[in-house]
Length: 439
View: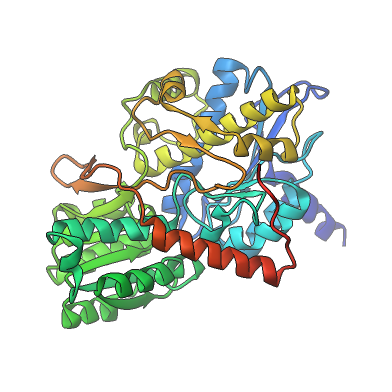
């Protein structure tokens, strides 16, 4: 019995690893992170967690935190398991004098489970570019944010890109587009949008599910070879991505007609395929590479002092940068909350207000050392998805780097907006939610 109790105490204690040691009585900004450094999705979870934590480490070392208030960053291991993710939330939400200020689940499954919990607890969930797309409607989901763009935005942009390459949207009629997707809530998220777009433009949509974790795909790609789609999209994660790219190469499917969601577009996904991955495309909402002043500050204030979350030579990888930009927007929301409420001792409810007043324009990005890194984002009470812009990046296997292959496209607002309104209205009805009024 004593051993069981001791084990439980140690397990809870191991959840939190603060970035800094502060005076016991000092107020701290508690930011938990549900990470996965273990399990089948660890190769993708690790660089994101490193970028996410390193940005907060840099703020603590360079600025003394946010507006001079130190950040207490808590990592909790989920192994990309929904049940463990919920347990992490429950074990960390009450940390600190004001409780947790925001969550970045990095899992659509965990996000779905946290939507009602975090909303009741008045803690913002920032499911950046993933999760429940209809959470874009802030009238129904006041504590859930999924900017700068959603899966439905991205799906519509991919169709726009394909139409452009085919010579016009009218040329899509009769074309075959396959979706190879992770057989989970995450992978299924774009299906409804693509079905509506197929009706609108007349292309034939082929759906090919890949079961967790995605190591067995021979049968899937035999179907691709047999059905001969003109284009393939992929909604994958972890090992599924690199296996898919290798299998596509084995049947000689053209890489410049293979487009992955932005979670299928990292160095981890393409490097295992070597030269065969050259030309592969994916969605993007920020740049790759470490040639920004914010990266220099992270190296100087964090890695030069031996406090980095990972390997120095991996700073600037796609998923590292994705963690960095997630931390940047979260920190700016907290900073905005402090100014709105004229206090540095903010709560989750205050930070929700900070997210809804977030306005990181080009001038602010330059001040943050991220000029040209991503596009300006402005959030409102009603709009939690942001601008919805998506670009495509392309892998150069010779240079071993990602390059932008397009400008940023705007999504098909007619299709996406209608689906968001419909799905959020259904959610409100099912959960007895009265949409709030946004002024």
